[in-house]
Amino acid sequence: MIDFILEKIVPLFTKITIPQIAMVVIVALGLFFLFSLLSKNNAGKISFVFILYVILTSVLCVLLKVSVIIYALLIVAFIVCVIVMFSTEIKRSVWDSKSSKTISSEAANTVRNNHKLVTHNINEIVKALQNMSKNDIGAILVFSNTKIPTSIIDSGVKLDSDISSALIESIFFPKTPLHDGAIIIQNDKILAAGCFLPLSQEGDLPKELGTRHRAGIGVTEMLNVTAIIVSEETGIISIAKGGKITRYADSETLRKTLKEYYWQDLIESGKEKPNKEEKGGRDII
Image 1 (tube, rainbow, N blue to C red):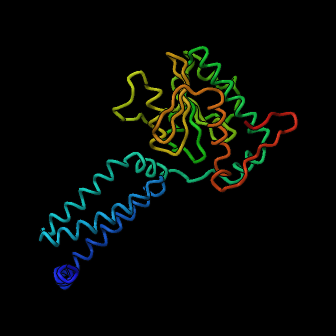
Image 2 (image 1 turned 180 degrees about the vertical axis):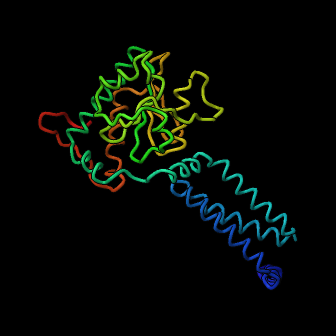
Image 3 (image 1 turned 30 degrees about the vertical axis):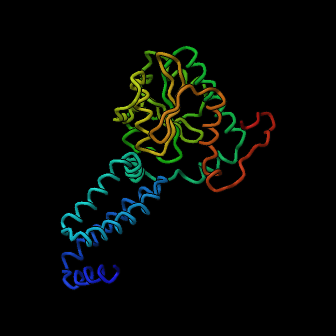
């Protein structure tokens, strides 16, 4: 069997031309770029599947004497399937590449070294969300540890304000100029308000999810951010992350989500999360 396969494959290498080599290099670079994007979004296992697919397809094509064109079409078909299946991850990586990867380390350390400030921010955000939920006030808050594309920031009004429940609630109060857009929060600042977000094009979303929910899901499809949405019709609080939405978030869920946001870098680096009680403050829970 092995000798038969070698007899079929070896002659092919003797007939390789420079244009064919160039084509192989271009395809290889394209595949490397594609799988690099996927690996950054926890889809790296597809690389193993692709290698296995290529090996099996190659063996079958040799045994069945399939033409090179058919073989190439099979490979292209697989790549197209991968792109369709992981379109959300690919879009998110492309959008992230258009923005700065990280915020300044000085700004990040200022927040992460001040446990009391983080506790205050979490309390103020949860308080605002619960008050708006009780009063059926629609809202959408986007939390980012990376730089938001300027196109989103410029669509609203730049604030660079400290986080407070009073400010958040006043922004989303009905009929105010900025209540229809989103608030962008980065660490301890409200960067902008009234921002327009890309809407999700997912067709399987429940009909009861309105424009705010589609915007919250859409921005998390494009960027590595977390969005919290309050429904204007029902007051239900939802959390969107990675293009997926979780509804009926209570106080405990909100605090857990915000803790993960503020201590994301500490968790990823494997350091112990702070749990000490600050003087004059509360536990970071």
